[in-house]
Length: 293
Ligand SMILES: O=C(O)CCC(=O)C(=O)O
Figure (cartoon, rainbow, N blue to C red):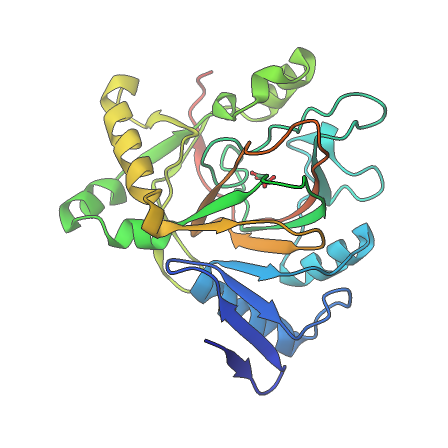
């Protein structure tokens, strides 16, 4: 199915049943005009993940494009992994950085929404594929609006009243990183409680906001919380609720962290380079520090 927006000549191809759409007809090496931004935002709100395929971009072009969609994070909550000239770009790579083995090679190996462990969880992320392994290195996305809407009304009522405590220590791969940097990153990001249902500021849609980086629900013990966290995560990640992106070099994949969670799969030969750059659009202030480590 194809739909064309008359004003912008944007072509839209849905990629998945639950979420995901490819946008064609736009040269993303140039900053979009306001009409194009509005058209992209409308598609993004409906499909949650949007994909621009196969356009080789410079770091500056990624930043110029991304900043049309909101204020970009300078990644100060994870300061060691930023692009040296563009702090608005986080390097997710298994190439060496500054002559040292990369510590972000295993970023994203459990289901999460970006920067949920901060007081300003990301609104959106835009991930550019500079280099991909010959096979695999895919990323999967889950539609958290659909996950919420397919809960029973009783369960919706329960999660509506919960705050989920996000703990950066549950970030997959953290323990493989330099212990001093990890300690600093933990101090920068103490455990924080966010509403377990996030309301999208533009669409007003309610989305489940619980991931594998939740340690417990505020006011509940960890053992009380565990079965509910596990249930909600497995409910949200059922195959029919997923879009799986198979990367090509030059792809820019943009997801809305308020309505989607994602996971980076380790389904590739670690000896082959995979190099990605991520721009992160800041979200609203949210949550309260719970003061436990
Ligand atoms: O490398 C990927 O495919 C995704 C990385 C990730 O999980 C993230 O940027 O939050």
